[in-house]
Image (cartoon, rainbow, N blue to C red; front, side, top):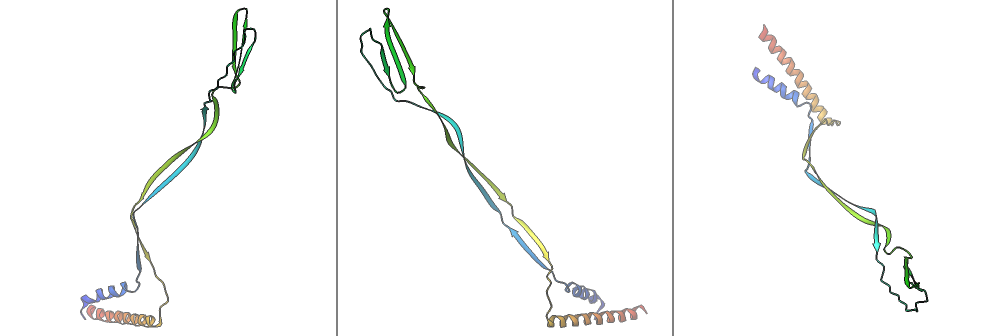
Length: 159
């Protein structure tokens, strides 16, 4: 055997002694859409219209006229040749009502997740079978014989 083959053969034997398993994992692109609808109740005042009511009376000028509806009262009379008239509300004409009005807020956002390559080297350890142990022992013996053979050849060259 020629000396130029010894170094590549030894490098091959040493490199093949401890194999490692390389795993590759990929994360794919994905778009996540977050949709959130929120309902908020806002305090508001709304005005309620009241229906129109009408009332009338015809009386002699010596009497006092009193008219009334659900929301107002009126009083009228004549004194010394003059008409006196008063009108007052029983309550406000437009009735304010406090209420909570629902307002819906729509929120939408998109997020993109990029593709990422993950490479991880995993050392695999497991028990060797008897056959593999036997082959390993033969390999160690061959390495020992090769080392002895190289030592003999180098000693002959050096002399």
